[in-house]
Image 1 (cartoon, rainbow, N blue to C red):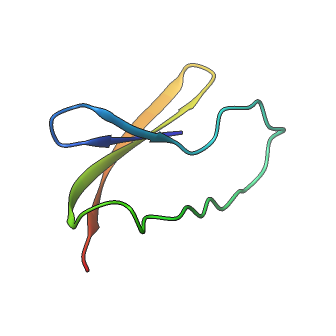
Image 2 (cartoon, rainbow, N blue to C red):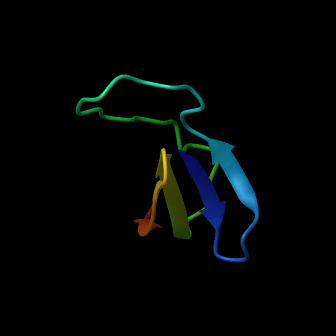
Amino acid sequence: MKLYDVLGGEVATLVNEVKPVGSYEVRFDAANLPSGVYLYRLQAGSFVQTRKMILLR
């Protein structure tokens, strides 16, 4: 799972490992990120999903 800014620049890699089937929760420290719109992208096998996240301070 990776985090991108609205211009497409990679901001962080949140998860970069193979995990067994299941439900997971990811927490990350956004203290160094400014308020704004970010995109996070999840890839699992051939499945890829991108969603919007809004960070407010």
